[in-house]
Image (tube, rainbow, N blue to C red):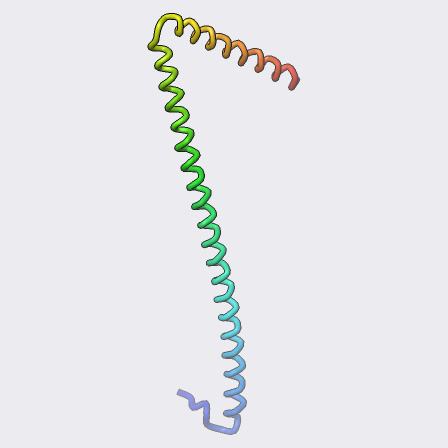
Length: 111
């Protein structure tokens, strides 16, 4: 190994190495600071996404409850007497007619 302390230029070499070490340390500190800020941003984004997903979960649960209740009421109505079946047929036919009328009106306004 070379002996860096030997000779007349040892002070200049030490100074040059110190300057290079300081530059490398500053560069490393900048990169560490950047990585730290990225880690905080990733953490914040993950927390935001988790809260969003929790909200979606509760929305899906309420929608499931609503649909389950509607299906139960519909099947109760279908299983009940003949009068309810007539009303169900009239409502179904009315909804289909309203759908076709709206479809016709929308398609006519777009052309």
